[in-house]
Image: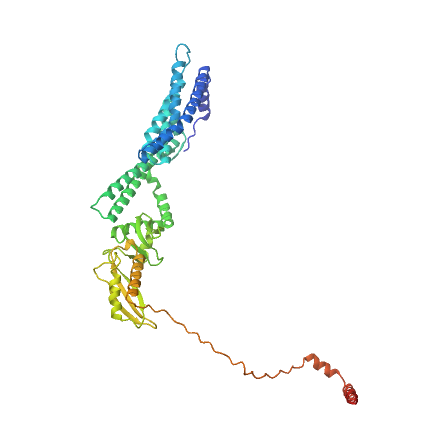
Length: 477
């Protein structure tokens, strides 16, 4: 069960220690000396930093050495502070002044440990890992210098809880995290070193080198995890059922990841695809050469310098054209057509000669040219030739062959047909007038019909008589 420490006793002990060792006039003087030493050290670092940085940049040393020197440049301030503090401690501890400099000596030891630790971890290239190592080691060293390492570990061990026979405390968690971090970094460092040695081996193929390197890395990381967890005092047997359930869930969730991982191992074992091969994916149309084969994906670099990170599962489930698998010699086809007035025998002869002009075209097998069909406006041919370096590109060598065909056809007056179109313009005779179309009689609207139906017959007769009288009057005039 959870066992909480006695916080009241711990706080009383801390207050008593503070009143006995900190709240004194000597410690006040020592604190003032330490503060002045840090201020003077900062001033020294500020004025010396530009000159040292310029000297490092102008030096003709490797880049890795320059990086280490730039990191060590940051230790100028604590080093200068340590020197000033050392002189002040000698003067203050002399009989003339008579100050107790025990606290200054403790700070000097801690500062010296920081300088030494930071200088010792410069072989670690990663900044985050280097800082974690330096801070962790320095904290342990500082606690040991001030003599409170045992009390700190006892306090951290008091914070914990028990599950049956298993007890988990804050100290065990910190130890486990540190050991796990250190072991994982060592596994990564050793695996990187082993990969470099394996990749330099000339007796192994490229795929075998990558496969062995990946197996070494995975094995070392798994062992580092197991050793790191067990070193923290955690019994893995208590997580049997829980790990089985979690493993099942993770298996479903990471199905694609595991599929890509095993697909990558299969590709390396069967050697169907190797780094440096020129491949083409039919579904996506990606064409390029294999630059790197990772655990989850394979990097393909195309001719336009684009990197495609393709999951390894794609190479197992879809059709892949490996242009350099087995025999690296491949055949290319160039189709063209000539005018019907050209001699086909001469066209075949000059086409073979033109195909041999580019340097990348192989002499064996020799280029061949065949008639494929008699088209609508041209005699169609197919020119076939072989190359050995598909990784240098396919479209460029086709373009060179087509250009050589163009030059050769110009030299031998062989015409390449192109489609013709004829436009006929018909003149219209303006003298002939078109027949007049009969006028369409307007149909009476329903409203007019209704209006006519409403007029009586007498009104109609009266209007007709008036119309006759008007006509007679007009005749007399």
